[in-house]
Image (cartoon, rainbow, N blue to C red; front, side, top):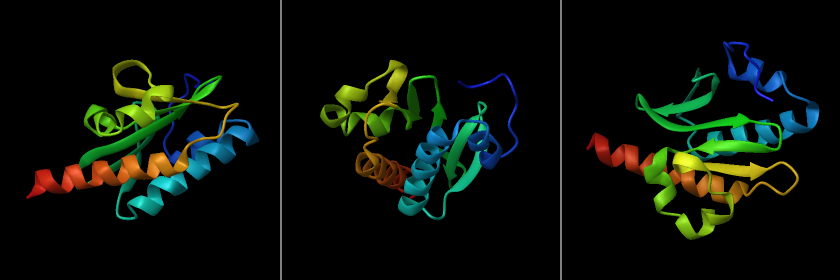
Length: 122
């Protein structure tokens, strides 16, 4: 689903998908924002990216049959059992589009990553 187009904004990225996928991406975006309102949005590696204190917090992307969620491997280790049904390559997660997205789990991961970044800053 991800095209070869280079996106400038998260809105532009989300707007490039069908409405049903846009709804999932917007809810995922809102979940990250709710967990870390101070995080900054950008596009990195041609996908929506959130950064906190200049460090990568999480990324996400839409594919043909799933949503990819990338929380940097440290964030995934803490939730290994809960994440096992969604485990992808290199620490990524794959949330199938035909099943409910575990937004509560996403929020926990984001908050965990936020604490990791804050601990590094001390």
